[in-house]
Length: 336
Image (cartoon, rainbow, N blue to C red; front, side, top):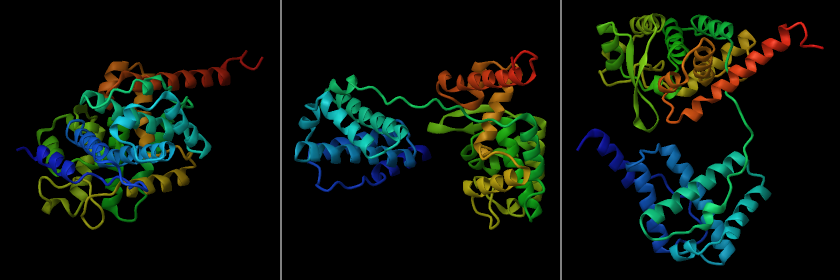
């Protein structure tokens, strides 16, 4: 059995706890939920936080149904729910003031459970298919300008009181902006991965992203150089095992994302940048600046590790907005 399979099995055997409803669930319903969570962990490789969110959504739904029907629902009762029952649950969430984004995710969780029951042949409720997902406000990722990104990276090298920590922060932020990595992807890199990269003088790096999917990311010479400078400066890497994390905290342990986020908050206050200047904004900036320079959308999708092109297409809206801003500011007839 592979190490990945063992980790998945361990997560299945001890899944994140389901928030307990006021009344215990019938055995058949509890078994269906356990089977769905097992499938999410082993087949979909859902992250622990994702599993916890799904189970919390299902707990909320089942608690409402128990109150709505007067008793904890069996699988047969769930199969018999009508569109009005589901809408009553959505209406209750709206009355409670829950955000539309939260309700949209909860509805997605419930739909996932019902699809699982249908695949297993235990229920086939068509009523849930009649529901519309709550309309969400259109939000675009906020990218930094090229100058703002350059200032942030430059200032990061002088931010920390400890020299090697400053080198570490600069290397991380350069990876986010120069290669479009998520912060979790950057912090998950191991000593072996980076040292193999530096030893071979390669310009590509294998990155494990969401859902344990791997992708090949090209690295600019400036990014590789920052990694090499940090490796030489860090006092803990020489004794670290090959499988240990490459980016470490001041005591030598794995670096927490919150440390990087706090460092960026200090930098943006010093530079007068907007609150949208976060570590993740550097990834958005990577994509936006590539697209603005004529980058192909499909290529950017691959570089970012997006499963769907529709996710990457948001950056075309950003680029269009920026073009309109330039037009309004510069065109002689824009104010007329």
